Image (cartoon, rainbow, N blue to C red):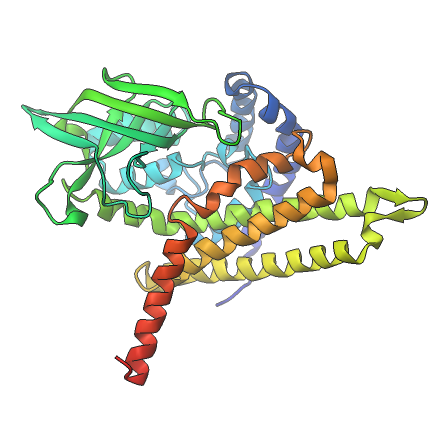
Amino acid sequence: MDFAISEEMQTILELINEFVEKELMPLEQDFIHRPWEELEPVLKQKREMVKQMELWAPLHPKEYGGMGLGLLDYGLVCEALARTPTGVYTFGCQAPDAGNIEILIKYGTPEQKERFLAPLIVGQTRSCFSMTEPDQPGSNPVLMDTTAVKDGDDYVINGHKWFTSAADGSSFAIVMAVTNPEAASHLQASMIIVPTDTPGFNLVRNIPVMGHAGTGWHSHGEILYQNCRVPQANLLGPEGHGFVIAQERLGPGRIHHCMRWIGESKRALDMMCERALTRQIAPGKTLADQQIIRAWIAESAAEMRAARLMVLNCAWRIETEGQKEARQDISLIKFYTAGVMQRIIDRAVQVHGGLGVTDDTVLSTFYRSERSARIYDGVDEVHKISVSRRILKEYAAEHRLA
């Protein structure tokens, strides 16, 4: 693997880092304390600046108005943008829209692309992805109660979803629902586009996460689908292929997540170092003079670098060998990077003392919003079991133990 970054990519990263530091980091207190609808007009202005700089939608193909970066280069962009909470949103590559755009490009009909994709990719609308259910284990996503039953030319959807991220203010949801209950377990569910103004689409609430419910894009909705009727033309991809499409979405998506987590880790480490060097604990003595603080800084730097190299290597494998060949790497980076981020943010909070647990810094936001990184897109334990199963199978075959 060649670790060199092209001159063009280096210039792009320098521009993005400068924009993040000068234009977005000063908005962090507004992001933390003001409702989304008050911050959104300011971010709209920042988005226009990004478009003028030709840095909009770095992940998406040029023919759709994006920069067309490959997975490896886009991972580096994620790392830079994630140092502040509004980075990915301002550059038009925020979840869940980024994943929804990818599957609409690949599976959407011409009509779906015109109605749903076109305004989404330019930032005129937002979307959400409605899969997780409160009464079913996320560790086994084929278990699903939400159904979509054909009635004439329509689907009638009934079910209960939660953690439908960014549902508040979105224009449509991509919903996972069982359409083929008699099929094999992995071929029962389909993805269906549901405009959020459809009767029967009910946003019950934004779910409080550690006391913060959030609004707008930065929220997680609980949704009831009650006889929600949409045309069968809103089916996304082949019927019964919802899980197949979801897996295509999740593999590269984990690169995006992990590089974001490394960006947040880098910001937390920067704040840890600054606090250690400036916080006096006695006349002429700072936290940086304490051996334990130095050990935390060293451990954080080592863990972050190891995680970063793992993720970049995984992105390179996906690009060169394909997602199937990189399955083990994808699981490894998912649980390892999430754990590294949690430890680094926790150390940064500790170094900041009482200040660290307040909303006067961005650390509490990182801590609150990213504890779930060890849960969503596959809990740590499932990834560990999956990886170990494959390792043992390969070992047994090699040594003829099974």
